[in-house]
Image (cartoon, rainbow, N blue to C red):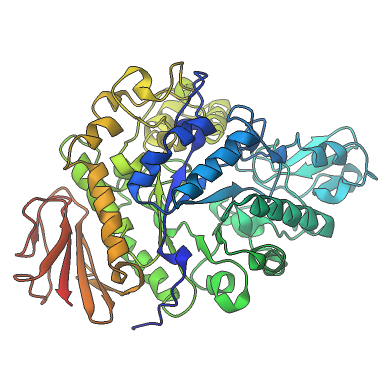
Length: 560
C-alpha cells in the first residue's frame, strides 16, 4: 500500500545514543563525563547523525547507573556540572545536532527529597508521592521485582510500619501517578529542561506509570514473563500521556520516544496515532528475543535464531504504521549486548561484514533509526564468565539468587555472558593507546581486550572500515527519502538466510538484500538485477546473479 508520507523531522533523523559513563573520560577517574562528550563533538558530527540521545546524567546515587534519580534538576557529580551540560547542549546545537534526554519518571531514587520526606510519617505532605501499603493490612500481594535481590517488589520500612512498592531495585521506589501533585511536579520539571533548550525526551519504562493500585493477588503459577501486564498499561495510562502531551509536548517543537514495555501490535496506535495526542514514537521489544531463551530471558539460546520468524515480526510492525503512527528501529542500546555479536557474527572473518550488513538494515527500514555508540565501529561482546567482572545490578543479583538456591552459577554465567548488558557498556575504543584512549586511569568497567585492533582511529584511517560504511549508509538514507518513507514489502519471505525487501516511493523502487548467515545464499525473485543501479554494498563486487556471499548487503535501485 502506498501511503501518505506525512513528513516530520523526527521521522527522518538518525539518533545516536551516547552512554556517557563509557564514552570519554577527561579527568582520569575512569568514568566518562560531559567534557568527554564535548571533546568528541566533531566526531559525532562527522558520523552524519542528527540527534543525540543522552542516557541519564541527573544527580543519582547510581544504584542502577543513573536510572535512580535523586535530583531531576542537577547533574551527577561524576559527569560534571550544569555548566558542562549547557556547554554540551550549545556545542551540539552549533553543529546542527539535537539532544534528547533520557528521563525516568516511573520511579525516583530512594535518596530523592520526595521519598525521604514520604517515609518520615504517614501524614507527611509527600506521603502519597509513592505507593505505600500499611502493615496492619497484612503483607501486600506479592509482586516480582526485576532488580531486587529477594525478587520482591515490596520493601518494608519500619519508620512508618509500611511497605513501599518498587518494580526495580529497592532503591527505586515507584512514583504514585494517581496523585495530581506528582504529575504536576513532573510536567514542570520537563518544561524546565525544555526551556533550557533540550529537544525532547526518551521516556524510560513509561508504560508503567499507571498501575492498578488495588494490587490484586496474582495467580500462584504465573510464569515470570507473564507478570508484566500487572505492571504496565494501567487504567489511567493514556489519560496521563495525553495530559503530558498537553502540558509539555504540545508547547514545543520537540521529539519524544517511549520505552513501551508490554505494548503490542493490537494497541500500538493507541499510543502513537497523531490524532490521540500522546507519543510520537515508542520502541517495542518483540525482536529482541533473537538468541535468547524463551524459557528464561537471563539465558542465551543459539537455537532461537529463526530468521523467518524474525522477519515476520518486522513485517507485522511495519503494517501497524502503514497509515498512522510511526515506528523505530534499533538493534543495540545500553540494555543489550553488542549488536554485531548478537545479530551478526563477531568472528575475525565476519565481524566487519556483518556489522556493515546490520547498519544497512537499520538505515533502510521505514522507521526512525537508533544507533548505539560503539556500534558505528562494530564493537563486540566481552563475554565475561567471572562475576567479579560485572557491574550490572541485573546480572549480579540474579547470580546471587542462584547461588543462594544452590544452582549452577557457572552455567548461568557461561550462557548469560553472551547477552549481558555489560557487553554493551564497555568503554568506547578510541585508539590503540593505554586504556583505548578512553581514560588515563582505571576504567569503571573493564575494556574489551580487542581495543588494539578494533578502535575509532584505526577505522578512520581505513576507507573500507565499518565506520566509513556507516557514514556512507547514513548519507544514502538522507539522499533517498524512499529509504525513510517508502512502502515496505518482503521478498522471498520464507528464505532462512536472506532478509530481502523492497522500498517503494513515487517512481523509485529499491531492493534491499541482506544475508544474515555465514554461508552463501540464493534469492528467489523474478526481479531482474542484471542492469540495476547498485546504491551500496559491503562487498567490492556485489552480487547481480541472486547468489549472495556470507553477510553480504546490497541495495539495488530497480526503478527510478
